[in-house]
Image 1 (cartoon, rainbow, N blue to C red):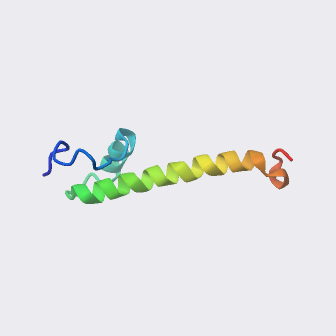
Image 2 (image 1 turned 60 degrees about the horizontal axis):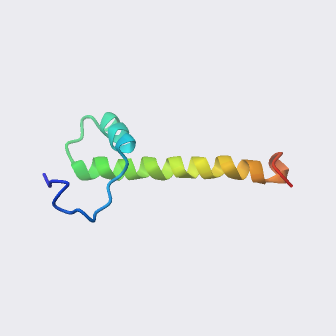
Length: 65
């Protein structure tokens, strides 16, 4: 397994996403699969946050006009 110090310029997903991915993929041995799932979790969280903000900006949805 590669050490995190081997590629210092490679961005890693946040710890919360890595932990959640590890919990979800407890039976998967491939670290690349866990990292891919962690990035998907980050993306999903960002989309939810963006949608939450858009909800307040859309007059049709009761947001600001």
